[in-house]
Length: 225
Image 1 (cartoon, helix red, strand yellow):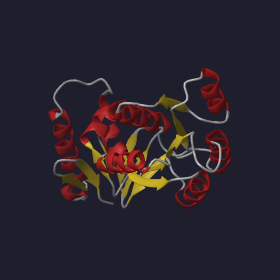
Image 2 (cartoon, rainbow, N blue to C red):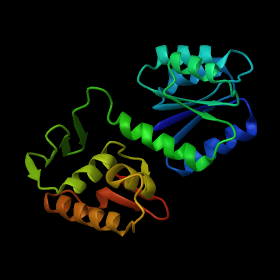
Image 3 (cartoon, rainbow, N blue to C red):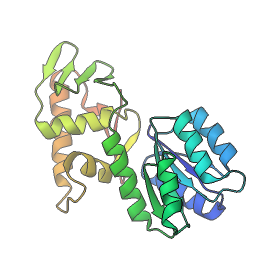
């Protein structure tokens, strides 16, 4: 499951962010201080960190620098009430990937998170995704169940890869539309259901039950390995 660490000393903001992230299907972890953030990051190896610069114990820029060293592949998005441009530049130089100035819109934050995770893609060096008998060769864009190749259309492959890369976790409809189609997609999401149906049918033809792709009502889909 994709893990997002929220480092924020304000209890109200921290709780709201954790709740919003959980609602989007992320594993949301939280820390109220720099020291706690480093400890939680070491334990959970988050995919993305939301880092408030105004922490009570350690300067947020120093925490950013230490997070970048401890979890080099993570995405760090700085949340700051500081409006001086040079302070933001210092944070970016310390290893942050992006920043948002408080107050910010939750919808914008979630869009930034999805965009960063989409660009981050599979873990560095990962070329093959596996889930049970299913194997996806990412560079070749070929899918196999056992030794048999499954003929997939381009969007079907992308959709299956998005689900299998997070096997066992709920991937929301919004996340799938953003990742597989386009972050600016404004049409009906019915196309997602059509592609899921096609995937289920093709996997079933190769001995993988249609129940592999589970519908989570009101949320999205989950691939069960």
